[in-house]
Length: 189
Image (cartoon, rainbow, N blue to C red; front, side, top):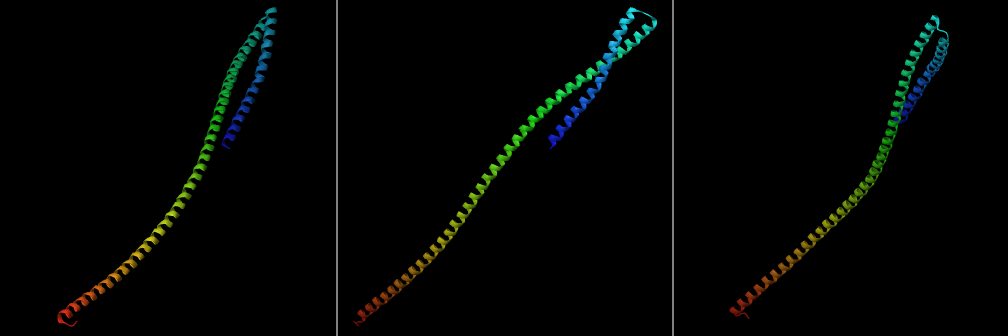
């Protein structure tokens, strides 16, 4: 919107300038008529050189000089306005190119941002999947550790029971052997 209001303002300035320049058309037309009259008067004065005519010629020459100065000033202003208009057109062209370049860059940044947002979403989704997989693996590892600890405890109890049975059997055997030895020595058997 800023560009359009600026462009509208600029074109309004061009219209205003054209209005100002068209105001000078009356001066130029008047000057042309005065110059024609001056030439006609000069021609007539050459034919008859009376003092009244000389005064009239001098007055017309003064008016002609004033009009010539006015035309020169107006021509300079016109040339200046033409130069300014040309410079403004070049600036507009350069600014339009810069605007188009900036709009392309902005579109590229938007597309890149959208692409990176999508890639970021994929990475976050992958991280979530990996986190869930890690949680499942840790849960399985804890379960296996618990099962392993349970198996070790059961195995240790079983081994302890077997050891106790073996110890009891050994103790019984020892007593039996001792009793046999004692009986053999004592003569009971």
